[in-house]
Image 1 (cartoon, rainbow, N blue to C red):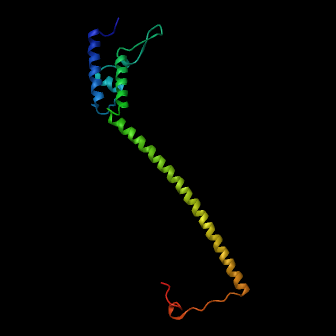
Image 2 (image 1 turned 180 degrees about the vertical axis):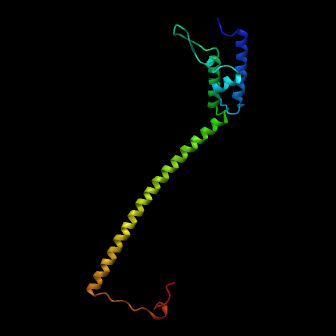
Image 3 (image 1 turned 30 degrees about the horizontal axis):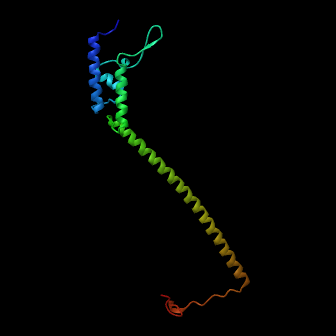
Length: 165
């Protein structure tokens, strides 16, 4: 014996179909999403009607509106596959996820670049320090041997044989 009359069930199914069409067109209530919870609230039926029920003997039977819930999910999936998103938040979430993935790639590339530059800087500073030590050692060696003579500095600040330019 059904808990609701056939006329009530038919009215509820009509309300669910009308709510389904509105949601799939993108007419979402404030704070609502394009999901079964919002569909049930918009149609004025309980959400549990979209899910299977258990009989007393443990077997399952379909919920009174389960076929409509499956139809809603199928139509929603078809819209999403076609690139249409009735829920603007879903499209925004997908866009932000893609943007987040791109930013993570860029951060990883920058981190690698920074690591390479730090290694290069360390190597360059080491080479400069080694060259400085070599120059200092050569200067000391030249000063001890006494074979190095300084060239005279020209007076007047001009080159002895004219300009190089």
